[in-house]
Amino acid sequence: MSTSPPLLVQLGTGSRPLSDAACYAVVLALGLLIVGVALFVPAYPQPQRYHLFADGRALFGIPNFGNVASNAAFLAVGVWGLGFLFSARGRTAFLGSRGRGPYAVFFAGAVLTALGSSLYHWAPSDATLTWDRVGMAVAFSALVPAVLADRTDSKAIGPALLIALLLGVGSVVYWRATAALGVENVLPYLVLQAAALATVLGLNALPSRYTRRKDLYGAFLWYAAALAAENLDRQIYALGEVVSGHSLKHLLAAAAMGWILRMLMKRRPTARDDAAGGQPDGAARFLLRRIG
Image (cartoon, rainbow, N blue to C red; front, side, top):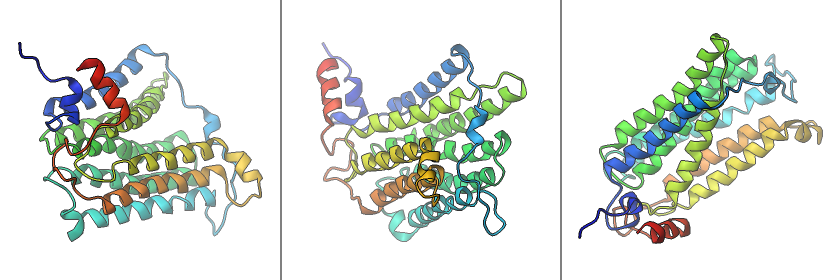
């Protein structure tokens, strides 16, 4: 009696690359999660204390100089990443024709984050925070299909990227629309960010068509440090009033993006140029034993 391969085999832990259906399933699951949060979880408005940062010093006529200027790190990484992807070396660094697009959108998101976050920190408010979050949503959303594309050249990558971007930007639009209607709810945006990162971590446990896939875990460590710095904004600033936790968060988050660029610049195709070119991580092997 024949049976279809287990889901994780379809996801690249067996002898076949990631399927079109699996690519769609990943982004559609994210969509269902966000819709479910919007419909069934109590609304959570944007806390106004979020706009109260430790370092409000002006310099060279620029208000909140530290938080504005530190966004130059996002701009540098974004421009560097796009420059690499569209260089002669970058154009030949990907197997197949679909892997480069999601990473290009990811680094474009870094540039948008630099611009939007600079605008926000110049004059912090919910209205300007919108532009900060649009750039971040683009970057987070693009990372999911980027990691999918590392495991397959499926024609579903393009549509998956579009769906992910609609979810990311849509979650920001939803937040502002609900605020205008008097029922403000920022929770779908927050959940999407966390879910996208968790999805990337889960997918990264599966074999890649490239070496250095574990470098992505290093990027997550940089980002975890960024979140810690953000939550210790005042405590870090109080250490000597040199830099605030939020300014440091910008630098550490940009370092996380830079670590991903470093991965792209250093990696090479695996010995086998399909998703079976490696072995699954321990978590994936555990699930395979349970459902195989």
